[in-house]
Image 1 (cartoon, rainbow over the protein chains, first blue to last red):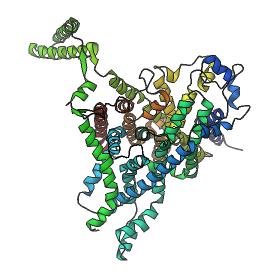
Image 2 (image 1 turned 120 degrees about the vertical axis):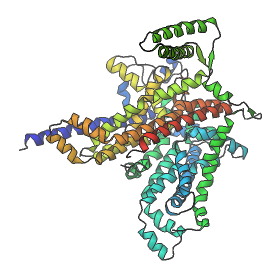
Image 3 (image 1 turned 180 degrees about the vertical axis):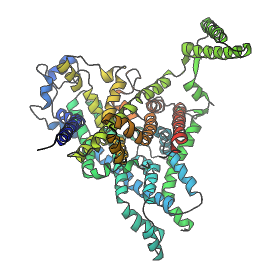
Image 4 (image 1 turned 60 degrees about the vertical axis):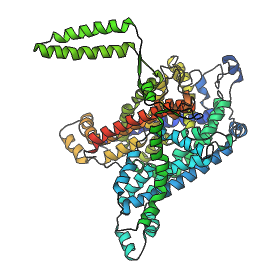
Amino acid sequence: MKSPYQLFASLKKALLFIGLCLIGVTMIFPFLWMLATSVKTIDPELIAIEGGRSGIFPTDGNPLAQLFPKVWHWENYVNVFREIPFARYYLNSLLVGTAVTVGQLLTSSMAAFAFSRLSFPGRDKLFMLYLATLMIPGVVTIIPTFIFFSRIGFFDSLIALMLPPMFSAYGTFMLRQFFLGIPKDLEEAATLDGCGSWRIYWTIILPLSLPALATLGIFTFIANWQSLFYPLVLIHSDERKTLPLGIMSFVDINSANWPHLMAASILSLLPIIIIFLLGQRFFSSGLQVGGVKS
Amino acid sequence: MKERGTTVLLFLTPNLVGFLLFTIGPIFFSILLSFFAWDLFSSPTFVGLDNFTDLLGLEFSTGSGVIFTSLIVGGVAFISACALKGKPAVRVAWGSCVAAFAVAFTAVAVYGIPTSPKFWQSIGNTLFLLIGLPVGMLGSLFLAVLLNEKIFAGRFFRLTFFLPSIVGGVGIFLLWKWIFNPYYGPLNTALQVTLGITGPAWFEASAWAKPAMLIMNFWSQIGGGNMILYLAALQSINPSLYEAAQVDGANALKRFFHITLPMVSPTSAFILIMGIINGFQGGFDAAYVITGGGPAGSTTTVNYFIFESAFKHFEMGRASAASVILFVIVLGISWINWKFFASRNY
């Protein structure tokens, strides 16, 4: 027999659990709706009535009953690949994302090593300059970057998309904070054994920083995957578009065909959801918002 | 540890070259460009501060109206200020000041027409969208408090709440455009079926487009990094504080307002400042995908304004001037942050 207090406590727990479930459903519902919409088909009759506006629900009956479509039109997904060079966009996004992630991890970790482990004149002033640029709005640099790439003949080239985000002041800042937390004992022993800076960086610091590198890498890749502003300004031709731009051209063709749009959207989000599920332990670590002392 | 210069250069050069080329260089180039008029095709012409005065400036309708109104307003302000107590000289001085201020205010507010109303509108829109920040912070704190309890599948809930903040981009904006579709979207359909209300036109109505943006942002940000920050802050609060308060008879609400809220205030300050800074820079992607800055410019943020000036109208100098103004605003906020918060214990 439970005491009243225990009973009250477990009742509170149950209410809390139900509340969390409700919030969770609210968070997930838009995704489910997206999935459900993506396998529906437009009612041609409705389009005729409303002059080209989208229609997914039949004109009669309760529309919400259609949460689960009667017929699942999986061919909507095939259609995405048929109407636009979706595979090409995918490949471009993968190429740019991978190059940016690898490049940024490398340059940021090297600079972070210099800022946290090497001593040279003006080090702290230079680091302050890095810090100061963290707050600078992206639009401030986009116009000069656009002009720069146009002048050197890299306009409308994937190189122009890859280069600027490879050098990140934020990545340098975050990794420096992490490196500072690594005890120096190992390195001192290694130095006594005759290890140079490069070997210390490559065989001690990097392996010990895998969680931080993974976190930075995941966030860099995702941010790049979703990036719309840079490609919009720097890319012109269809075969060099990345996914966000590609979907925008799909929108131009299918402006009111919501099932087709949702199918394309889901295809574009799939890699992020997979990364999210595989790398979940890095998301809740709070590492990505480094620099806050608790 | 003393290193040879070559070692330092080896580690620093790759990042530093990119940093100078794609961050520092462009900043100075933008500032330089803001003093020119340039359409990319012809050669740039120096126009001094014209871009800035054009963006921020006011025009006055030259007529007897402005003088007449100013005289009346100034006179009334002067007389009422002089009617206060005190030495006559002080009263006259005060009256003149108040009158001058009143005249200036009236002239600007009633007769001043911004030379670039669209720029002011974009600043207004950006400020409006900042309303979402404190609301979102409360939501994040609320979720963090719930998740801080020991509960079955807590980790699963944390990941579920976190999902919308990670999965974003064009696809999600399209999803929300569909959800808010005034005619067949699920939201207005649900409103019609359950409550019998005909929902607003959301993104297609200038009064409802920004609230719709706020709802979308609330959904995507409430369980994100801010919630994780709050969760970390909550976990660092000493449990004995709560026990002592409970012994003293403080109920849950009192414990929240007198222990939790003050204890997480450094985190709140951090989130607020970062949120304002990000807010000033944000809103482009959503506006581009969902509304194209409309309807009637109601979702044109400063970012979007700069993009349109530069890459639609090819006014590179004007766009650069706007980005310099944005830069100065963000710099100002950062300075306030540094001045008032960074010196404290966080």
